[in-house]
Length: 88
Image 1 (cartoon, rainbow, N blue to C red):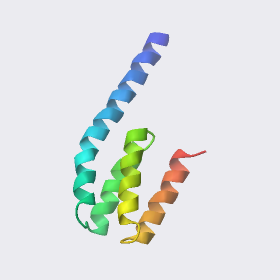
Image 2: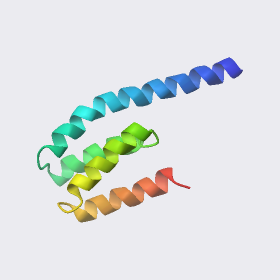
Image 3: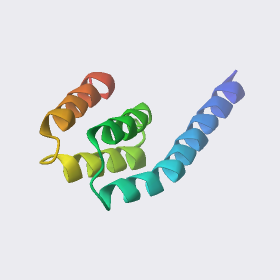
């Protein structure tokens, strides 16, 4: 049973790494220009699913900081959603 748990944990680590690799260019792109609120929400939805991982969380924070003054209500919603979903 311990081996099975180890394999599952390893798969989760790999999945989080893959999510980071996929999200990094998307975040770079979104932070290099002004995106629509719909595009921002879509990106943050995707990042939120993997925000338990430190590297993905840093991407999430980067996007939130970039757009805090452009779409303040949207960012507020996603900060609150993160807290509800991932903090105790």
